[in-house]
Length: 371
Image 1 (cartoon, rainbow, N blue to C red):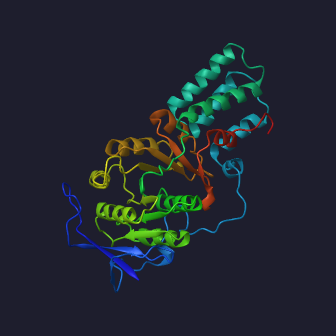
Image 2 (image 1 turned 60 degrees about the vertical axis):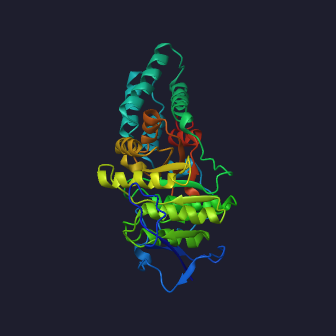
Image 3 (image 1 turned 180 degrees about the vertical axis):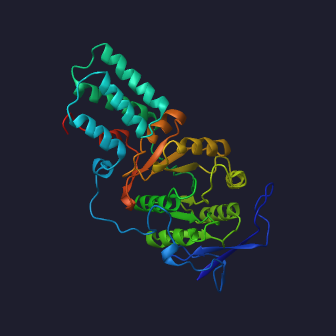
């Protein structure tokens, strides 16, 4: 059975409450509460082949493997872990050459010039004061400095139980894994006993709605969608109304991937946030930007451009497993101080982890010399 909600697509300056117009299609889920909307014979969106219903990171419904792999095992293939691990595995001499090699490893991993310079200057000053008895002591100090850089941004996403629904809007450039991240978050929240609804606001990419619906079916979560090229702000507005009427705990809205240089699409993103704000002050409650960890320093310009358009309140850094550029996490922390909510260290749903600075740094550094 397909439920239809009639809603005119809003334009800037409108409240998105006029009628009639574009139908909103709600993906059927067996456990969903019955809707009071009128039944209709067919959905708006055309069927999409399952083979195309995925993004660049993972299948819409990846098979979960038994057990939970640790951070070190997941990140051991990253460039930063390999370079620093190789550097300290040969029991290096405590001298200026060691500092230069550490500096090269950090820069190569896209930690960034500013963050790297601050880290190396601190280690050099402490070495000059003879605080380090050997290279093992310097390794411990490097760990301490790296963790200190990340600790202020390690702020988990807390769901306000009094806000029903708690609204999360996900944003980011093309191919970073937004839709997959939404599916993984849906599973996390569902496992925590929260009720959810998803809004298929990526109305530009043909397979995006089908992919989100696949995640919805897998997690037994309702998905509100319209046809391709529909007004994304209207989808978000109607999804909120539906979630509010049903007392849903969390609403997660997908948005189309867009390059930060595309002015028109960036303006559309601002419109989505403004239209949701018509439901009340403080809505959306979280604007979660998904960053591809393999993009390195380009992530800095992305966050800067998106933050200029909407108030980004949290980051998810994906694809950290195997990338040589995972050091961008440190650059992001130093440059913006925006909370890093989650880190993606694998394709399985359980590989989207609450960001843990100690576990992250320990996975990049050897425990001691020779390891």
